[in-house]
Image 1: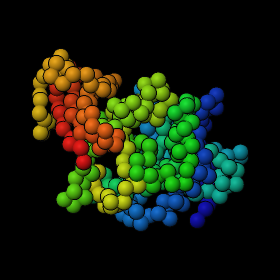
Image 2 (image 1 turned 90 degrees about the horizontal axis):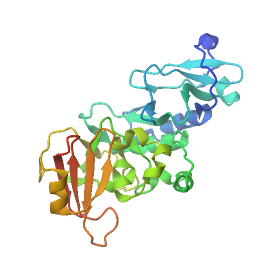
Image 3 (image 1 turned 30 degrees about the horizontal axis):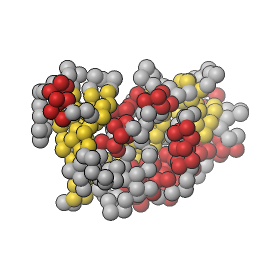
Length: 316
């Protein structure tokens, strides 16, 4: 049920006008909430919140002020310590085609839907929750657009009705910490994702370095991943398991070697460097298989320049 503008709307802290503010359409975000209700069976035990994330490396995420702003009223939105929030359904806001506005400048933050089934193990997400995050995020207009040839192509793809049903929809998710590996697990079946599905595809050249300043992923590159959302052989209850960069190595083939040692042993690699000082070196077989089907050897270098972890991903 939709409500009228609340009585305390005029008591909100004023957000000063900016030349280029962070704005989102209130109407589209409510439509995202409605789509969540419609598709709730994908994540039956989960709830929806919206989340703010840093888009630039110097973005301060503390004490963010958020408002619903119409022509004749302003209503504050409470932002939790984890930078998530919910929206009241206000008929007046819909009538006035209101916006959801922060005091932060455009391109300083990005927005996502957050849908989490409670009770899962740490470092684990549920695939159905993430599929629904994509549907809601696209409906709510949360993914930032950016002005480049690749960006304009991405916009066309993203606007397609079946975007989130594609096998590898280029919808970026962000883990809580920097990632070394992501795996899918459903019963006895387990598959480690290709490095091309991490770090906005930089190891495979899918996001040119020149496009990073325009990408949602610039400040969160080491946490970014995509999933086979449209591959129905993975049920909604599939677990998405994360291995982080700073975790202890388990089955590493090489530990402690230098970059010179690795280069001498394996040759030239596709390299992704992160602000933290970590580096990922990716080696792929030359067999003419589909992009995500090649065998891979991935080497993680710590900020000190020595090998801290490795993984071998055979071709499926």
